[in-house]
Image 1 (cartoon, rainbow, N blue to C red):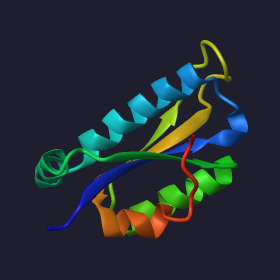
Image 2: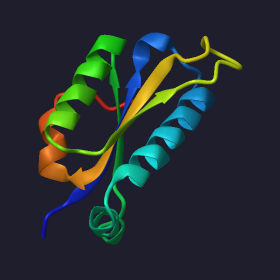
Image 3: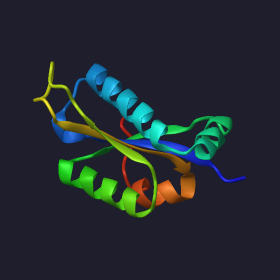
Image 4: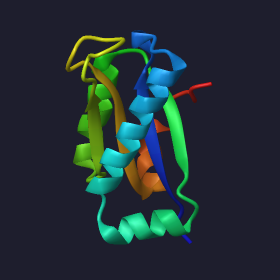
Length: 116
């Protein structure tokens, strides 16, 4: 059986607080989930709804991954902050990728380090 997962890519260069990062990751997860088709969402949910949070060092890295996800047909969602607390309005904080087939998403994210 093919495994499914979702990956959230967070910009480490913004040095977000843990709480702020958690809220941005939640936005990315939900927004990206909504973009997946029903069959994919169902397969992901029934396989445990695996989520992984990784980091990149810059906006450019994040946007490069988004572009590659689009080329592979993987649903994704950029999160732009409202700017009420930590960062200016419109700052891109993270990217939700998937849910989707694990092997396909790993092509984009397997080299990225987990946020710890």
